[in-house]
Length: 198
Image 1 (spheres, helix red, strand yellow):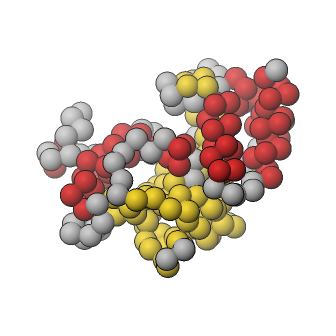
Image 2: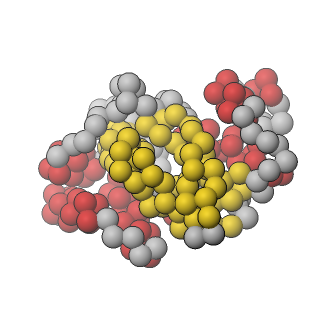
């Protein structure tokens, strides 16, 4: 399938449906909470710390492509229901939206374990509506909340098309530290993973 954003016939149906909800002359905000924070892979006009309420960052998705394989699955983040999540919001200028959405769909919507939603996120300057990729709890890759040892074991073994699962975790923790965000659960998990992998 072509990923040419200028060709409507080439777009995945979920992308075409999402684009119909947008005002084409308005900039788009994207909420990042995992690897998109430190490796967005798309052009943006600005970025800033952001808070999303009603969802939390969780290692709740079995990764069989980007950070693992079907035989040795890793773990990646999803936005799961409940709590809140601190991350980064990226503003995409209106002329770049079609291209950026095509890139996001190619990266995030491979197996449709995520549901793209437009949700309010809080910035220091006020509230904006941003696209966020929320986990689909009915999807076979959803694995819920794993205990520390099980999560660490999966992360230690995970290697996929975008690299080692350990790097995915450590870079996310490092970026959260740079943002001044204390995530004690992820810090504990990283210690456990380093102990297992060592």
